[in-house]
Image (tube, rainbow, N blue to C red; front, side):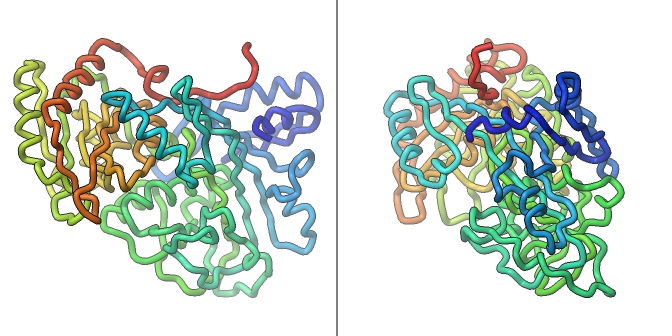
Length: 453
């Protein structure tokens, strides 16, 4: 039911707003208007971070089974009378459209469309509208289940499978049985996602779970919740946990809890999730005119997906920026130059106008860039990945992709047409200056709605 969330506004609705926002029963026209008045109002308080916003991407949170599929969270609670599910929310995420990347020419566009159209994982969440250069993301569904007096008993963490947390076959069955909890933790949250320890997959998965789970948590419990994930995280991931106020446990084989939060049925891609986490991380957007850095992210120290003639390319870009005489400066990104993640967030959001890099984990830093920031990703033809395109568009950034033939099995690349690429960079930077203000309409995402109102 692509637009199933619309039908939910008719007749009964019980909307369970997060963190103390009042619940609304709608059985009359006035009641339905009350839903409309309150639907986009969310107040979240976590640690020292307070977010008060009218968010057009805020999902619909439904806590009644009426009108829903029997597999929905509220129905799981309703029809399993002996279960220990104490809260159950069906999270219904608004459909949206996302612009295609920008391309240097039609041949690169055809390559992208052909590869994207054949990508089975990508097509599980979106379809292509080639005539309008749009990717169409339908209504998506998530679940927040909260169990009492239960435990986690060593389900595989960090593995890539459909049965892992956020996989389509993930199960909650082990949490249905109550256990004795005299030595239990107060509250835990299951986040045993693939490679949860890593920089990129903490950002694209664990934080997404956290954004959804906040919709069901009372403010009084947030500081008590301990996130259960896989192996010990990278240092920078530990810093992200701290900023978000998330306690975390790793390598856990068995743990009991008085409350267990299970948000593992969470969509991977949606504007609400990424923007909510950016707010909690303190990411801000700054005017284009104050940002003059062209940030190049080379894969130093990596054996894969390197640009083998990176120095030649950098020299050409420096020459271009000098000729433009706009005060723009090329900077090579060195993660060791920053003491902590807050410094990276601040530097990128305040200073960077454009980011240029081959596909890789470093490009996840682009999620800290201001809206309008141009992203140029060099993509190996033999190793397509759409995640940076999706990330950039969700944040209203100007995403551009250039396909390069792989030189070897690990997809190292040589840029054979550097002059052509630098001319395109010049065009990208020039066009950015011609479009003042927010570039949401030309670079980002838009809600998808069936009626031409």
